[in-house]
Length: 220
Ligand code: HEM
Image 1 (cartoon, rainbow, N blue to C red):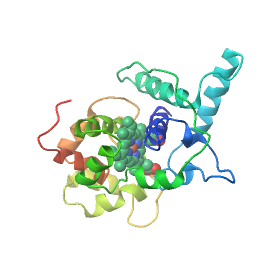
Image 2 (image 1 turned 135 degrees about the vertical axis):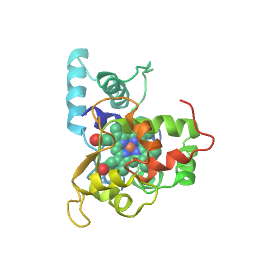
Image 3 (image 1 turned 180 degrees about the vertical axis):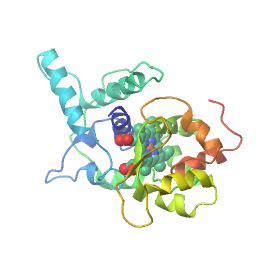
Image 4 (image 1 turned 90 degrees about the horizontal axis):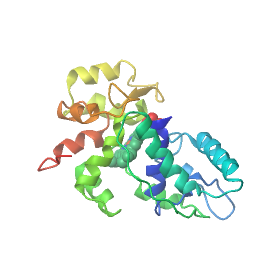
């Protein structure tokens, strides 16, 4: 769940800033961002955010903390709980009253992006190559679905053959679309395994492996 909460914060922040808009369901006035390509049948953890929000509101006696702040704190605390570093989260984000599915479709990065596309995608958010590499370290946590990495494990040339074979065992050429595989061998531990894998061409997504092409390499 920690992985999923971290990703919710990321997908919230990339669409019009960290304003909780990802949590809003569709109304007659707008379509939910949950339907966007990068989110549909993919992001999860909404019910846990609802539980946290209810508990915080109960403790405060009334709704006090914004949903956007809850996402930010939950992401940080998830990373800490899974063995990662901590950071100070400033509070005071205001929740949006609207969502933008079309914007989410255009700004969320996709697994098939090459390095120039990823650099450009992050640049549009005011983030540089160092930010791109560091933040992608979020993939030290969590899992991905076969339909998303299938093309890479069957067709890529920049992949360790033993790793490709291992992943093919649970991700057949046809079927098994929702079968899950971890980004690294320790998906519930915030460690450096994700980056070590990239050096060995063991990145799960095309976008993960693309980071190994950053030139000159980034020293985090
Ligand atoms: C650099 C561009 C990125 C791309 C293209 C990307 C793409 C993806 C994809 C395709 C998945 C798997 C979705 C699925 O199989 O349903 C995923 C999962 C995940 N992403 Fe990213 N991501 C990126 C950056 C990030 C960043 C910056 C973070 C956080 C700092 C992050 C955190 C996660 C986590 C934790 C998961 C696992 C979620 C879970 O297991 O529920 N990603 N990402």
